[in-house]
Length: 238
Image 1: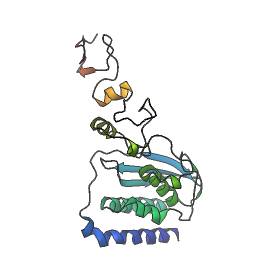
Image 2 (image 1 turned 135 degrees about the vertical axis):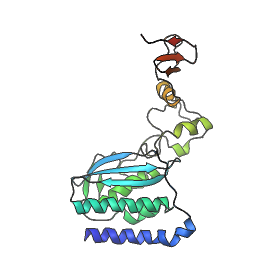
Image 3 (image 1 turned 90 degrees about the vertical axis):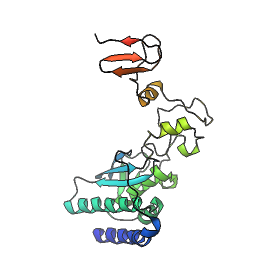
């Protein structure tokens, strides 16, 4: 019964993909190396891992669902369901369509959710998964039991420097908000937000430790030799 319900819902959504495939254009491939996150949680006593893959702009492009202690049939259904959703996303089906189709569905496993900071109960596995995706990628706080906190990335006044920095930030991991290691130092939304010096240095390819002579985080390694780009001091291996 559960498998039939899942298939019927999935087919009804995917029919729109097939009908509109020509209008939407070709399948948009994901980068070979991409951001994303893994969320471990327990739904009604059943452990589930949700993994995501993102495009360079932070948009969701694929999902993986793993329930490694469930029966082989249910695990296969979950894996193939995730593939179908991923194909739909890559052909341009809006994430909102999947969220509208699968939230509030009712079947087991359901009940209390442990391990997720925003979702505390779910009426089904699919209800939980698409609540999580809606909160993380669309800021659908109406589907959260605990609203995420922090400054939303979409509210920032972007600059070339900040855009470059945020390209390294997995959007879903931070639920579309600034990561904790980004400090504003102000209640206003600045055009450029300074990072912790260690984080910034590593992003720029430096070692992430201060120079003993000048104190700048601009040490660069060339084999066993380390040189400071600021004061040009060279540290030879002992």
